[in-house]
Each structure stands twice: as structure tokens, then as C-alpha cells.
Image (cartoon, rainbow, N blue to C red):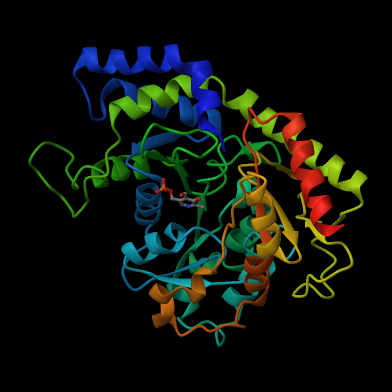
Length: 395
Ligand SMILES: Cc1ncc(COP(=O)(O)O)c(C=O)c1O
């Protein structure tokens, strides 16, 4: 990923925005953050947005505002960045990992529904499951139709909230509705490699509920609605004005950038198909979904027809993944593994008592996924070089 290409095009605007903040001498929250909050709320279709220090902080705020309390459980995916689950722990709750859909690698709604219904199989009482936290992995929304149905029909008596981890999904949609407006609260990250990125750490929470937004404003500022009066234990989770100013410059480009990512994904798809390397893995072809050793050396993930995918990552599943990665690195082609060890097998979560083999779809994915170069300024010739190199590796 080459962030410099983006910076070269934006340098004058970004430096002017930073100068504006320096001239104002207002460095934390303030008018820049408030303007960004309005603009992100408008982009996502949520009623309110609350700027904060990082995506991790945003997840904690989103969970606490949604009513997650010590002793509760939150169902989430084992195939995500650590923060998706560590934020649950920081809210005092216990993550309940449920396996992912073999096609999209997003949290499997059918398994979640089953887990909620099956009181015996749930390690904590279903009544304690306060929220479901789907992650819109790689920029594609999880199956929000089915999560909605679970929450509003199947599990209505339990009062379960949907909290979106939209860290990778700014601008993504599900049936035309923006990520960030699909659950009761949603967390976004503006980490420097994200589709919309700050020049440091920053994040934001969106919500459909103004009361929750007020609560989160208090929580991000030491539980203090007014200076030196503290009503609860919050934290310093505030956003810097400089980050908000940079983000506001970039926000004007996010639609074009996401469109470029979609074009690059289409180019990869086409070139892989022409090379004969791929077969697409469909969600509904689940007869043998824990084994990915099909005949094609490269397999694409499924795309949900209801989703507008913003390709934070373009990820393939491959045989001999680590050898291929080294082969690409030797040609100076960057690639990354999101994620090499599922969360239920992380040492930090050993207290949950889960073991290898418990969540086989996520574990198999961890052995096979490879993220290829994906950023708006990537050229078609570069994509061609990546696919040609992969073809050469398997020839
Ligand atoms: C899915 C997911 N959740 C949460 C986070 C945490 O965001 P941050 O790094 O801004 O704290 C990230 C990004 O790093 C992420 O990819």
C-alpha cells in the first residue's frame, strides 16, 4: 500500500486544514470534530455520530451505549481484528465466538440464530446475551437481513442489540442503507490504512438514537457532562481536532476512492478468471465448506448481492499460501494475512476454554487467506503484474 500517492494529490488541502486548526488553537473536540460528526452521520444515514480516539475506543463506546454491562455476553466473529473482541472484554462482558460463513467469512447468521435458540449449547444463559457484534469484514456488510430477523423475531424476548463493527466499511451499504445505520450503534476506525484515514489514530461511533449519542459524548470525556463533574466512569477517548480536519478533507473524496477500489476488484476478478486460476466460492455451496482444497489454486470470496462492497481489502484463498506470499515478496509485491490466528485461539482468550477444531471455518480461512494490493491509486498494470505473478507461481 502506497499512502504517499494519496498524499501527493492532497498535500496542499491537508496542510491548509492542519494550519486552520493550529491557527484556532483549539486542539481537542471543538468545531472541527463537530463538523466531521455531522458529515459522517449524513454519509452513513445515521442520526448522530460521536468522534473519538480510535476504532477500538469507538467499539467500547458503542457496546456500553448499547447497554452491554459486566456479566453480559456478546456474540461475535472469531475472524476479525483483536479489537472486535477485546472491546467486549473492556466493557466487562464475555465474547461468545460463533463461526463464520464459508463464502463471505462474515459472522454466520444461521449459526448465531441457532446459538441464541439453543439454551443448552450457550455457555452463558441466552438472557445474558446483550448484543451481537457482526464485523463488516474487508468492506462487505454481514448479512444484516438475517441479523435483523434474529433480533426482531427469533430473539425478541431477550432484547438483543446489534452493534456493527464497521471499522473496515465506511461507505459500504446493505440494500442501499449505509453501514453505520444498520445496527443500534456502529464503530468506525480511521486508522491510517483504512478507506477513510486520519494522520494518526481516530474513530467514530454512529447511532440512530440521540440519547445513546449523548451518553457516548459523556463516556468519551471521563463520564463528565460538565467540567469537573463526573457522573460515571468514562475515559479519555476524545478525538483530536487535527485528525478531524484531515478527515474532512479526505471525506470529499471517499465516494471516488471507494469506486476506484470497486473497479480494481473487478479488474482482479476479470484477470483471475482469464488466467483460469479461480473458481468462486458460493455461500450456498457448503457441502464441504471446511475443506478448501478444490481444484482451483485461487478462490475468491462470495459477494452478497444485497451488499455494496467497498473493498477495504481484496482477499483470495489460496493453496500453499505462505510460499506464494514469499514468492510475491521477492517480486516486491506486498500482501498481508488478515488474520493468521482466529480470536478464539489467541492466548489472551484461552480463559474461554476453546480449542483448535471448535470453529473450523474460521480456522481453515486463517490458513488460506491472502490480501492483495488494494488502494485507490493502484494502476491496472500493477494489478496485471500481481495476477501474472500468481499465475507464474502456480504454473
Ligand atoms: C475490524 C476492526 N475492528 C476494529 C479495529 C480497531 O480500530 P483502531 O485500530 O482504529 O483502534 C480495526 C482496525 O484496526 C478493525 O479492522
